[in-house]
Every structure is written in C-alpha cells, then in structure tokens.
Image (cartoon, rainbow, N blue to C red; front, side, top):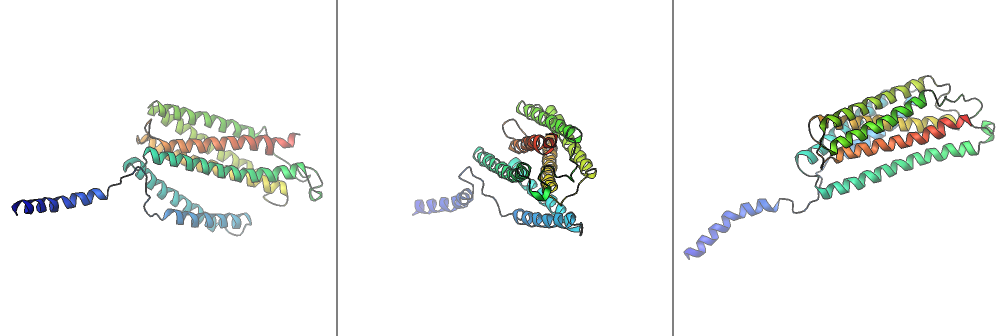
Length: 283
C-alpha cells in the first residue's frame, strides 16, 4: 500500500509538468495567432483606392490621406508582429522560411500579372491605333516625354540602386554590418530621389491623366510602378533600421531577402517601361 501511495504521489507531481510540455510545439511550423492586420489592410486598401479615384476626379483628397494613413498603420503593425515572431520568438524556423520564400515568389508573380495587363493595353494601342486617335501613336495631341531627360536619369538611379542593395546583401552574407548599413542607406536615398524626380516629371507633363488611351495607360503603368518604388523604399528603410539594431544574421535574414527581391523586380519593370513606354516615341 505504501508503494502504491508513493507512485500516486509521483504521478500527481509530474502531471503539471507534463501538461505544460503538451502545450509546447512539437513541429517546426508556425501557427499564426489571430491578427487584425489582414482585415484592416483590406479596408485600408479599399479606402486608398476610393481616395485615389476621388483625387483624380478633383473631388476631395481627404479619403486619399485617410487611406495612406491606414495603409501605413497596417504596415507598421503587421511588420512589428512579423519582426517579433521571427527575431525574438524564433517562429521563423528553416521550414517556415521556405514557405515564406515561396509566398514572396508567388506575390511577385502576381505583380508581374498586373504589369502584363498594363503593357498589353499599351502595345494594343501602339500597334493597332484606332480612328479615335487619328490612327497614329502617340496621338497627335500628345507631346511625349523626352526619354533621355528625366526618364534616363531615373533609369541610371534605379540601376545604381540595384547595385547598392546587392552590395548590402553581399555584406550581410559575409557578416559585414558596415557594408549592410551603407548599402541599404544608399538604396533608400536613391529610391527617394527616384520618387522625387518622377513627381517633378509629372508636374511638368504636357498631358493630363485622362482623355485618351495613351495618357491613361502611361499614368497607370508609370504611376503603379512609382507606388511600388515608394513601397519598396519603405520596405528597405525598415530593413535599414533592423540592420542597425543587429537583427540580421548571415544564416537568418529572409526579411532582407524579400525586400531585395522586391527591389530587383521594381528595377526590371522599369527597364521595360523605359524601353517601351518612353522610347517608343523615338520610332
């Protein structure tokens, strides 16, 4: 009886410890906690889209500013949670990082489809101009940009930024934080300069947003790309702040890789925009 009582006592003392262990993850996958950011992000994107429509029709700019603010809030909160999960909670295991890489690749492919639609519209109008635009491309009332003015300068800036972000990535792979910080800082500055020059170009354009197929497709394609440059610049600025805090390591830096992939995608799209949308007027 004494022996049975002792075994019962041991089982009772071991039960809480076993219960605690049962709550520990027994797999390398990351089960995401409930988050408000997807819902808020969808709402913010809708407000931003409506704001852009009202702004382009010169109705009001309040919705646009509200949409931008909500998008920035979503980005800040969501990135904060992801950084905490990956850097401090150890949720981004090697298996999870593989899934994140596939997710980023699929996201970039979806962006490729966006721009494929814009290029399709542009080449359809350029190769088969209709009678509404007098059968010529660009339409007679359009004075296109000189491709070797601001557009060419922006091309050089983006190509240089691709080199600087690659320099930063190389430094990270070799555990050279100084190179990472300098490369990212230069990339962020170059991205900001590109956006300022594009805003200057738009301010001095000789045609507006609408009225014909050329101006609609031009502003949609270049403006959508410009939005990607701004988002990529913010993305890289976040990576710069993380690099300065020592978050990235040679074997654990997917956040940086995702930003670099996104930035190289932006570079490649601009090459196609420059050679087709801008340089078409030379022929």
